Length: 143
Image (cartoon, rainbow, N blue to C red; front, side):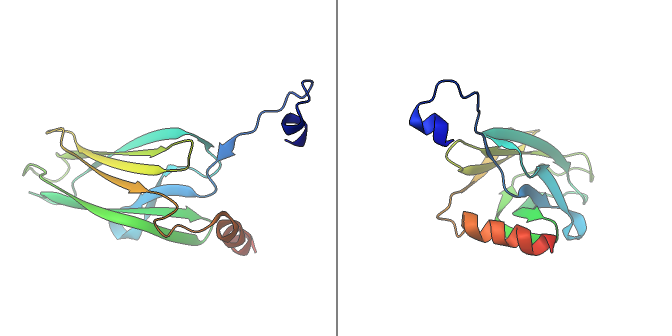
């Protein structure tokens, strides 16, 4: 990096920013389903489709979390309403996770049958851990 900053042209080095922790959502039984794994280069965008778990379920609560090893950090939650009544497993919600080059995380939930969407935007101002706190948390988890 220093050589690149100094302007050395013979350096074939590519620096990538990556996610420090895995990103995902809580599912049944407080099990975290990882959507974007740790060490994924950013910017990135991944999606998962989830089905309703109850008959005539008209909403879902989405809990967004970061996790690695034994540590789970809650980022935020939001509710998606307006799911059409149907037997369990019939209605689907697509959850799209995006991390842009500035580290801003956007989670978008789309009800596939209606196209209705709702978003949660997470920035460093949203009480996220600092880079130093994340590194300490990962090291503590490894021990």
